[in-house]
Picture 1: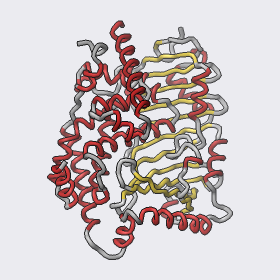
Picture 2: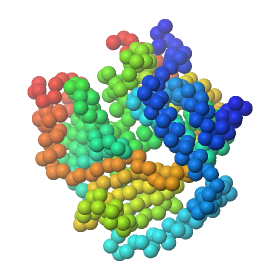
Picture 3: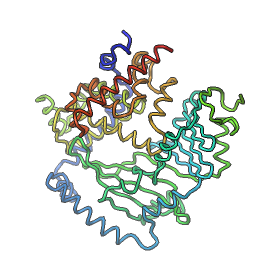
Picture 4: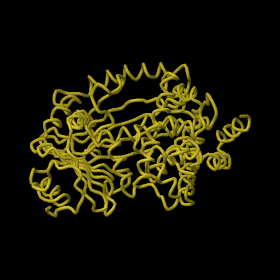
Length: 299
Length: 180
């Protein structure tokens, strides 16, 4: 049977199986989460009152309303005239000429994704994965070419107006560093606080730490997830240097780190070197579509 | 349904065996859905992991509106969308990444799942996410168009259109591949 002839049946018959080690990892972690959840459900004093209140269906809107009030109070009480607002952060970040954003999963030391953006050279380089399996994609606007490389094979194609428009659309105010693309996407009830705990700011010396907190309801259930975006901002330049994304379910006591990004501001030559090492000299990057070959080899 | 309710009640009491039974019952189908949508086996396993850990951790708050399978499927879809959103923030168009991966020996473990599965997931990766999601939910998750429309909060006709256009595009992609 050709899959082109009977696609529906072929897709319906797709059956992928988890590996034994995957089952073990998932069940171990799920059992731990279950233990924590059941423990939290036991009757207790103190925070249990707040938790029970939060779990009440009637109380959820009230809790959200309370959060809004608290957030306003905190917003005005914690922000001194020196504090950086989200808008200011976007402004300084948007004006940074050359940026590299490396994204990590919690507990990992190798980024699973890196993006270099150069406003002055009008260039964007994307890297996913690492080692021999790394995939690269380069948007070289002056040369009107998009190049990709995977497993040592380079492909290029001309950048069309549509692709350029897509590219422009994808570069947003908070590109790559926050879970929100634009300030307008931030929930109204979110609160933005400056953190004065020196042990937190010590993670990145010379930085100030801010946190954005908001609640998010799962569309398929009544579960409310609490999210936190913590950003370390250079005290002098007001530029973000590191950002962390946390989540906490209603049954958990603490936020858990999901992922984090490290933001650096390389020079033009540094980005040029990286691009040259992957795709070869600039002269090789033309708008001639369909080029497939070895990086760095002149045709 | 009664069995599901009983399992959920057991789970709320902290019964690990109930959790294991639920996991074993649905894991492969959920993985298939995640791989078909993400075109990345490792990322799909991470999604499956996050869904079950979140499900177990949030069991005290869960009140099912439909079947457990629908709930878990919706959780997978939500997580997959999150992954796409995250990737979009990093600017690279996933269609592009998918197309790129499908042109080469992509991250789906073809050796493990078979050539046919590799070909199909490669082709699926070239569809827009909405079409891919509709096809996978209908064919792999066994959801009716009406259920998909309710889940996605869109009109039934839109779901049917996405399904039809998606299949046409898949057919074209697979025929092109067969000619090569």
